[in-house]
Image 1 (cartoon, rainbow, N blue to C red):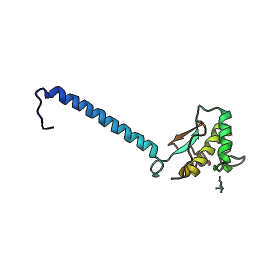
Image 2: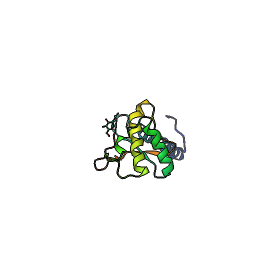
Image 3: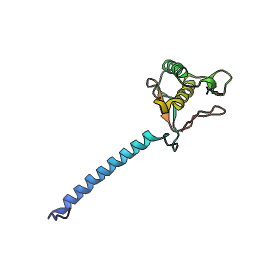
Image 4: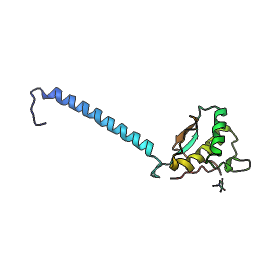
Length: 134
Ligand SMILES: *[C@@H]1O[C@H](CO)[C@@H](O)[C@H](O)[C@H]1NC(C)=O
């Protein structure tokens, strides 16, 4: 570092550039770590919902699996608060989130054969409350 190199100018600008690349990489790594740790500290809420791209057939299959493997699907039954709108996407979203919140601390994920995605936006509507467990 203390060495003086005659043409230190080009060397310095090269150093600055590689330094900012390093800083950018550190920043990206931090953003990545923050995005995967959200929810675990209760600071960011995360909900598991149906992927817009998933087919209704796949959503119904995954929803049935979720409802018999840890999700509480009472709220999407007829006359319950999350029955309407009665669509595969809405019912699957409720079931996926219920499963995810109940199981996330025991290794349960938000995957459902690629029919589910995580979101930071609370999907609750009217009297239909999507649960969030820190
Ligand atoms: C399932 O959810 C309903 C409300 O939607 C609640 O009344 C019931 O106690 C829940 N059951 C379990 C086992 O948590």
